[in-house]
Length: 244
Image (cartoon, rainbow, N blue to C red; front, side):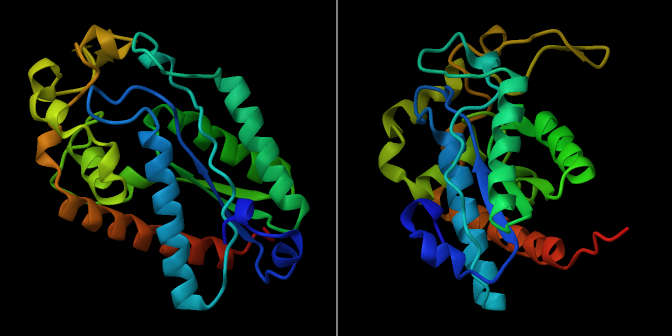
């Protein structure tokens, strides 16, 4: 159930304490992919995962509106990128989780589509779970799947999923040559330390990897795998004993 498309009586009738909160980012994904890639993929995984869970259990789960701006100032050199501070991001996510908990949805799975949010979400979920009435866990979809496609940034894995869910948003002409100005890995590493703070320091067009390598069929497989993983996680969160 999408909260933004539902009435309050319909939400009140739900018989679950679970909720899903997608979070993403609005940031450059190279010359071929939209700025909203991370929120679009998070939304798609959230919807597919809840559908899989509902099919298996018969229990519908509310999906909150996606949080579209995250911790992304590493991409600030590229036009259109938006970002907030880690403190602002954590506060917004926390208060959204608290809103859900107020209505009885006190077990919240945060479905994340942006690597820059990972550390903050892990810290925040632990803090919420230790010090509030809610229980929160963070699920980053591209860490939940096994694939031979590299992740990169605007690379084959993300582009494959976009080709499945929103193919009209992929500039296929730009994708053909995107790898010529891309990096084949993230950052500039010396002695285990990344010397580059911003993506334009190592990638001329913001891309890491070759987006040509990710097909729509592979995107469907990735989405299915992520949905299955999310459904499994929802089952575990629903049944977890929090009395200790």
